[in-house]
Each structure stands twice: as C-alpha cells, then as structure tokens.
Length: 278
Image (tube, rainbow, N blue to C red; front, side, top):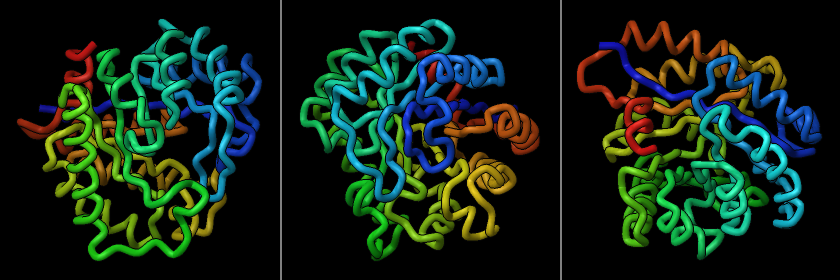
C-alpha cells in the first residue's frame, strides 16, 4: 500500500519573504503562479500576505487583506485554498472569498477570536509551533529537549482547539521547522518526527528553502531544492503527510517515488483524510 500525502504549494503575496519576496506581490503574477502550482500538482495553495521570516515586520490587517483577497477570489475553485495568517479578521475575509483552511503560525494565540472563527466555520486549521514571534524567534532559542517541548506545545494547542469547539479531525499540526530553532533543533525534530506523528493528527512539514538548509549546504534560497527534497522524503518516511513547498513538481515527483517505496499498511493518509472533511 503506497503512503498518501498532500502537497501544499506556497504562494507568498509579500515584498519581504526570504525566498521569493516581491516575485508575486502583484495580483496578476500571484494568480498566475497559483495556477502553476496547481498544474504542478499542488492539492492546496497556501496564500499569505505577511512574511514570517526571522525579523519580519508586522503587517496591518488592512494591508494584508489588500494583498491576499484579490488572489484568493480569482483562485477560488482551482484548488483547495489556505489562508496563512495569524489575524482572525484576515482569516474571516479569506474564508468568505473562497479559502477553506486556516494556517495559523501562532497556533491560535495571536488573535483570541481565531479559534471561535475556525469552529464556527467548520474548516480545517493548521497549528504551528513557534518560539516567540517572527521578530524574536531566532534570539538564542533554547529548549530542554526540543522534541519533547514541541510535542507538549502541540498537544496543548490541540486540546485548546478542541475545547474551543474545533473538531479534532479538523486540526493539523506543524512542528515549525525554522521558527525559533537552531540547525541542530531542526535536525533533531526531523530525526524524531515519529514522536510528533504519535499525537495522532496529520503532520505538516515546512522545510522548503529554509535557512538551516543553507547553513548545511552553503547555498542561497533558490539553490536549496536538493536539501528540501531530502528533508521531505525523510519526513514522509517518518510519518508526515502534508508538505508545504515552493517547488511542487520536483518535490511531488520525489515523494511519489518515496511513497511507493516506503508504502506500508496503516500509514497516515492525508490526502484521503482531507477529502473526507470537505
């Protein structure tokens, strides 16, 4: 039995994202790229209007909305759309425009209204671990045991979501690779990913073009595809099921081969599970 997985294509409608800032800031360019991601095999297009790279400045909700809404409205119906935001106001408008998933890197901590919004709308959400904020997360990050600490955080946020009325089957979890972690922290999370998979929810992995790959390989963001593929294949083998990437076609091809090879009965099936929640 081949292992199922979901590809989430990254669409940054921002001027300052670490890898593709300004490339898709104009709506026409963003929509064209979103359609290309779908053609390349993306099951989900994740649209974000506020960079969360280390040190990124916060963006007012009105500006974030101006960036993402025209793109979501024009991409609605081409694929499942996620809104990558910490702001309930932005998430609500994006859901109205056609998004179906809320990807909140603050794990429902930034906006008190976010949990209720997700519960009321009955949509899927992704909750990510992040130490501090994008402005502070890389200021000397330390953990007792990074895997134990991240697992405890994700379990607590899952419990919070369920208590707020979000159905457990609607929640995906993300260990936040690169968000308040050193290179060794990121590698340890990947080594022991099965301990996070054991929580029982689909695990989202976002290693695409991240800085720790650059530190390991001395390569700029645009030249980190090989490292991205390696980490995603390793994550698939350890039970991750959702892969958030820039290079959808190449990563998808690698995962297709890996999934057919690793295939095992009873492995988490993100693609089937997500279809059941639509």
